[in-house]
Length: 164
Image: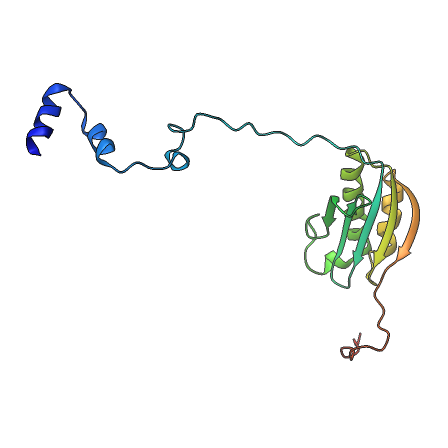
């Protein structure tokens, strides 16, 4: 066997790296990387969809305000929350934070072609009404305002009352 190796070395000069690659077991084409791949994948960019009408979901809790604007099927087009807008701590639960959040979400949705929106408000926080006003003032036509705050119908026992 050693004679075969000597003959191969004499016949053709091979670098050490090439000799190691020849001695290594063959790897599948996917693991080889760019050398073994003959086809290159082309990434397709997402086409900008123009969505004329949608739904604005406003979640106004005691600690935060979040607005997400979706199409009629529920696919989120744009969203913003008080934390994302730069508010921290107790400032997240203010009416001003609700206004800022709603304006930012509406601006993103308008950039994607939305101009008519149905508003669904959930929760009892301070940013509740100011967020609805901000969406309307951002240039979107508000068709319906619904309150979708969940109300218990004597199911499970409620948590203890909040004392302020």
